[in-house]
Image 1 (cartoon, rainbow, N blue to C red):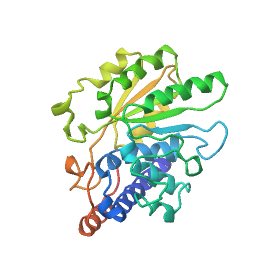
Image 2 (cartoon, one colour):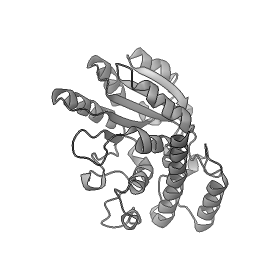
Image 3 (tube, rainbow, N blue to C red):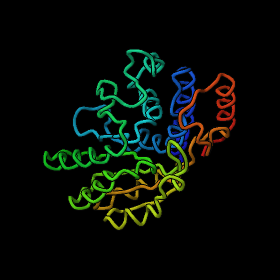
Image 4 (cartoon, rainbow, N blue to C red):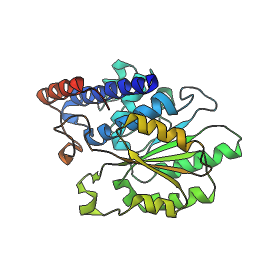
Length: 273
């Protein structure tokens, strides 16, 4: 449980960093809802699951396919020491390395640019195949949005991974039930995502995407499966602050000083997951 408590603290710090950075962005605004919904998943990945992330050889690879949620990525990199506080404060400013979607910059821990949805899983498949051809020992983790699964390229990739038996590939879907302009059911009902991915030959594990213990246990269990893994994480968009939770107005919005202070106060008073 000590390790779980460490991850919970990381997750709380991550949410506060996300909100602080969004507040400093001012009128440039930020994708707050989708960043907060993956905060617990990102925390388990960066605090526990991903190995040797800052090394040059045999380091696990991470791809944020839902690139608009980059604040969760940038702030996690800040918490592990890859991005300084000073640089994090340049988010969405002129000449910053930290744009509204990730731009490739290995020096600060970003291996791949992402913004156009539907691309990240295909990149992950290429990496996974390359690792086998080069006899490199690393895993590949790709975080997608459920709305992103509207993209046909996601399903082409979903067919490819089992064909090539990519057992070191992990796809994590942030199933928060919203996309930019509305709910998934309104725009393009995704149906039973678990059944769909299983039918393509993936090992599928469905979890509460905000329960740190269950997320960690899911990764521990999935490590033993000899096929590509799909972790379907049921999440709440804007998780952590009652004003933003399941409120799609916060997909991309400006955080005022009052709302920022209210959010930090609320997060500070919660016990955690």
